[in-house]
Length: 441
Image 1 (cartoon, rainbow, N blue to C red):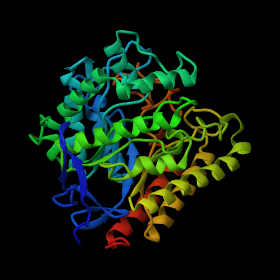
Image 2 (cartoon, rainbow, N blue to C red):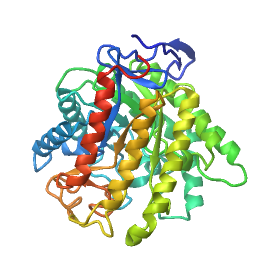
Image 3 (tube, rainbow, N blue to C red):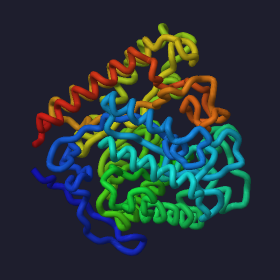
Image 4 (tube, rainbow, N blue to C red):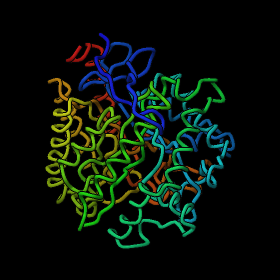
């Protein structure tokens, strides 16, 4: 059954015009109400975050590309069909940022890392996996918004710890109205969407291996207590205009925000709904980070896991209810939790497993009744990486954590037997539901 879905796409930076959504045919992922479809069948995200895939796949990787191939083979065996990956990084003076970066200076691109993205896309496609590619980052760990502002203002990039939280947020929010920064960002977006994969000869905008483009990783409006409504409206305008710009360049792929949800919408469910109702946003995403949000204390894991599970359930339920009301699919595309007490490999993951299991149960329950839950991407796959190696590892990736976090903090490794069992079981449930046609088809 073909999807019924059409959307209003803004022509690239010029004017509004009516365009068709990705229709879920020819291998592309489409949307039909609350559900993803592919070639007329229901499709669910059985996903992992592999943000470092392009860096691991670059030709200059001194350890070779073989590790990326091995990791993809492991993920395929686990049942993974979707990878959320970093598709943009900007060289920055901020310590502990992604290196090598794709954009070394304004409009100057590192072909080596782009070739790594080509390799990742080819190898993922060979395994029937799809990619969600984020095109910017609100945070400084990959350059992101702080680096764009540095390039346009001539001032040093401001890492997240360089200023009080609200002051830092206020500074980053100027990105949305900085015309020079927007021009640089859109030039990058146009380059990626128009790129021809050096290994397959397929343009990215024509490649069904790509499921969706994300405006940025965890974009936030900025916090200004005195005028948060105005701040949010400015942010919403940027979301709609940027989504329209992407759809104007590429009518075949889905677009989503990359937002955390409530925590990225000035702590207001109504704003979450407004954000995900925005023109050009094809499906909803949200993130759950219990430690960052002070629900969970790894040093007191047993004492804090009960409240963590309660808050996780409430957070997920509220977002799924919003997606139900919007009649759009929802993906929990980032969620992670420390090991029980410390990040060292071999430390038990009992709390993490409970946290994963509850979320998976909610997704399965929603999908089973025809609700909006359409899958998840756990953060993050560490695979054969072994802490304490990080950027000093031979392949430049090591344990697979972000460069600003302790190695092993949230990683799922190939020896984490209990977690792997949970993941495989959950993905199998979603695959069986897809094979059965799904509740809407």
